[in-house]
View (cartoon, rainbow, N blue to C red):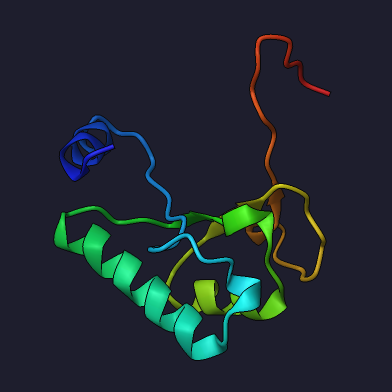
Length: 106
């Protein structure tokens, strides 16, 4: 999607979440690289008038330290492919469900 399209759906009231700047898998990066990527991602959204409070972990991978970094910049909820329950922050470890033609609530 273009930033113009993202802004349009944001202005319609849809929530926009972050997913990293370069799609690096944070669990493979050093803390300073993660912080740099998150900061850059947030600056792009903010400079376009978009405030985000949600995040999807790249490749669904995360750990407690990454959660703490995201909380530190104001992210309120995050999802992974599979929740690991590393922390007491349940909204930071939401399990993602894929919606398909045969998808049903469990």
